[in-house]
Length: 321
Length: 243
Image (cartoon, rainbow over all chains, first blue to last red):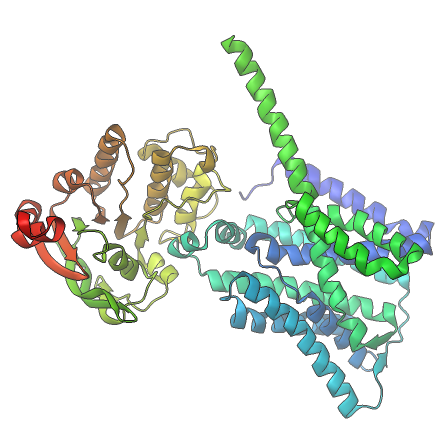
């Protein structure tokens, strides 16, 4: 539990090598592939952060857009007066605080009610921001001018993704992670074993929300011009859910398996058949729910287990014969 | 006589107009094995739910070693030392037997972690008769083995009071013998137990004392033999003609 196994060390080394390799990308290409890679790392960070909470609890949160938008606005509002790293911190705190509020108010709600509440919340925050902009300023958006270029954003998102993974791994090894697995299995047992289920869930929702807020803050300079409709775009929430489910939410590395093909596919569709984007999204969502309810990784695990049991069953059968 | 460890004082639970537990009082002493019996729907499981904090009493008080626990949330009560099993066995299906037991060791009164928790889990699994099966997924286990895991999980938290909700129900005659021996062994180690049970043989052979409930009211309390021959108790179980 506390010492690192050989396998863990091997995975760690492989992850660092892969990260280093991925960080080289801007030296090879600064155009299309870099932009595609930014999208992939962005959704890798978002989906993994989302899964930190929604994976073990099975609570589908559609508040991603709210956390993301808060992060974006934290940067947009003060980018001219405060240093960028500080604003990224602001984004994390604002999103984390919102997550805590939502958690306290709603995590006692079950399943469907939580989904609807989080969707409504993202809309509410967007409406409030739009209203406040109309009321107190004359502009509909905010400009974000920085020296940060696409590659800097890419590196920051890559670092964020690595941080999310590291956090997820640490949580899985901690009491909190064990508590979440028990809660996911049977909340009644969890409570009667001495787990403060509400506190554990809120803690994880805050961590997840803060990471999403950071992602939003990092992306602000990429958009350049921030409007409530883009920063709080509900599409972000839906895409995150679809990609995470496609990859599978049982493992930490599950979502990323969904993110890579899906972002590439999405890019392809937007370029060739941009009008059909919503249809493609709806169809892919249906396909995932019907064909891969456990996600790609869940499916692979099933196949693997079946092969394993066949392999162990065969010698036993031969011995019996 | 040993000290009172759990005191239930005029506990009442009403669901709207239905009073499931009607001002019930009783005490449990350190090291005692108390049987909580009564016909179906008499409020036994509700009583256990009040003690373990799954439900909060409408009125009345429940105290653990003199300290009020009624009104606290279930996880607080669990940490203070009340562990339970469930009427329909509840194991953690995605985990191994040892991990199931660890849940009690990590979050219960002991609050162990890492090697210590794992070690204790294997030790307890051995004690309930599952030696060497710690890595087995609980989903692949038989009903009685899952019940054993559940018992080990409850014991892992080092409870001051252990609540068994029909732990022996659904076992076949030979399993029943094993089950009774196991509970007896746990009690002999000094564990205070309250058991809700329908298996009268088990009550007779295990319990020193029992509390009988009927329609939410306590109708009798005392030594097992005298209580079970009490006309009111017989009436509650079998109806007027047999009393």
